[in-house]
Image 1 (cartoon, rainbow, N blue to C red):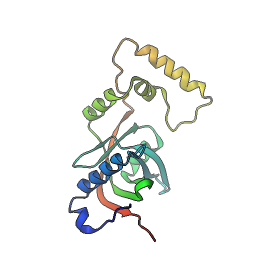
Image 2: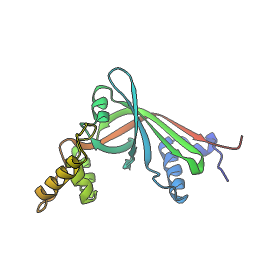
Image 3: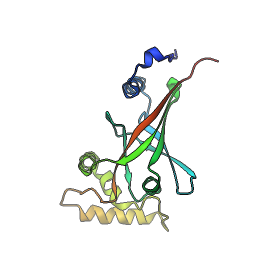
Image 4: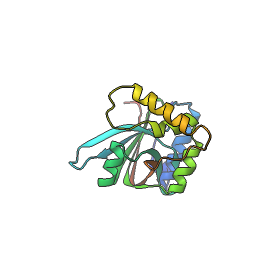
Length: 179
């Protein structure tokens, strides 16, 4: 049975209420509950959206990681505002977050980077994200190159890779219901 949403149950702190809904989505065994649409805008104001993964939530906001040289990274340099959307179909719930975006501290990016599987760390070096490549083999060649380069050492975080935090100034909760 679907839940209801009213102001009394939401409380005064939207981040606490988000954590409650996130926990309920976990309990419902929804796959990829941390998948969120990230919308940014380019210098001409054209919106661009893609799915990224929520990797942290603290008192300041919502954290995700990516290649700073990606299209989204470049857009955030010139227009540091974004919108996030979580959609949990099974619970008929959606959360929309709007806010200013800032890079997380380098130390925070380093800690998260080292927590990733080795293949993901090598992939951060190997993938020229958001840039056209002439052939799929380029990714395999780059991957092999960095796998060999880092075979005997801890894989460092690339300087072009790290985290962003969306500092919310608006959070909207939506709960579906019959009719």
